[in-house]
Image 1 (tube, rainbow, N blue to C red):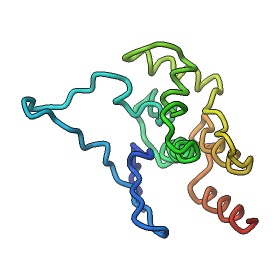
Image 2: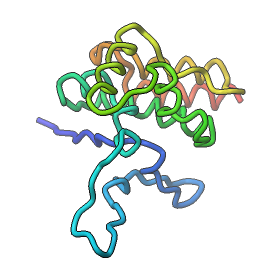
Image 3: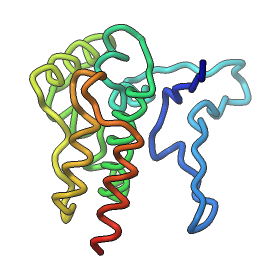
Length: 162
C-alpha cells in the first residue's frame, strides 16, 4: 500500500521559489517570532489561523486528505493570481462574506457559506480556463473534487494552447 501525506497548510506563505524551474513547498508558517521576554507564541486572532485555506471536511471533522490539499491549492492559486494583495486575500474575501466575527463563530459561519456554495471570486484578469480549474478545486464533496493529476493535465493543456 502506498501512502501520501497531506500537507495541511498549503498557502502562498509556504511556497519558496528556488528558481524558474523549481518551487518548494514547506511549512514556514510554523515558525513564529517569540518575543524575548516570552517563552511561547499565542494565537490571538483569526488572522493567525489558516481556516480560510481549509476545505469543509477539515473545518467540520478536522480530517485532512490529499483532496483537502487540492482545495488549499485552489486557494493558493487564487492568492498567486491576486499577487497576494491583502485587500483581496482569501481571509479578507471570506470575512466580507461572513461579516464581523471571531473565534469558533468564524469557522461556523465559514462552513455555512461554503455549504451554500459561496467561493472566492474570479481574480481580475484571470483567464476563464484557469478560473474553471480553480473552481474544480473547491467542489464541496472531497470525493468529487479534482485531483492533482487532473490539474497537471489541465495546466499542460493550457500551456500547449499558448
